[in-house]
Image 1 (cartoon, one colour):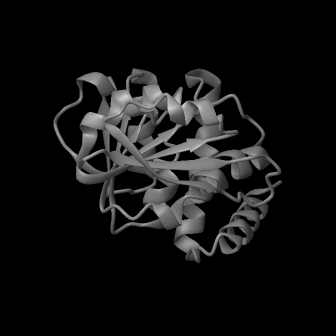
Image 2 (spheres, helix red, strand yellow; image 1 turned 90 degrees about the horizontal axis):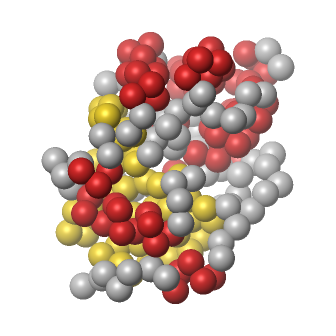
Length: 210
C-alpha cells in the first residue's frame, strides 16, 4: 500500500464508524502512521510493523471508541505509541489529551509526534501512573494495559468526581468484572466494531462508586 491507499482505507473505515474526517485530519493520521514505522525500528513502539495492520489494529481500533470519548480533558494511560490518544486528538482538536507513559523512549516519540503533527491539544507526561497526581480528568483511557482490576485500581485516582474510565479490551472474561474493586462501578460494557478487523473488541466504561 502507498500513502494514498492508507488515506483511502482510513477514510472508508472512519465513515463506517460514522466519523467524517477532513483532508487535513486524514493527512495527519497517515503522517502519524509513517512516524510509527520510522521510529519503531529503534524505539520498539509496537509489535505490528505492517502498515495495513497499523491502519486496522491501531488507528481504526483507536477511533472505534470516538462516540464514547465525550470528555473535554482526557488522559491516555500507558499511551505507548500514542494509542488511542493521538488518533483521537487528531480527530477532535477542540478536546485536550494528556499522554502518560513510564517509558522515556516512547515519550520522546510522543513529543516528536506532537511537534511534527502540530498537535497543540496534547500534553506528554513521562511518569508512572501510580505517582501522577497532578490533575483529575473527565475521561481516562486504557488500552492494552493489563487486567481490568489493575486498570481500575491504578487509575481510579485520576478520575474527576463524575469522570469515567474507558478500558479497551479484546475478548472479555466475565470474571474480570467480578474482580473489580468495590470502589468502582461498571456503567456499561459495549461491543465495538472495528472496520476491516474480524476480531472481538469490547469497551468497559467505569466510574467511581458513590
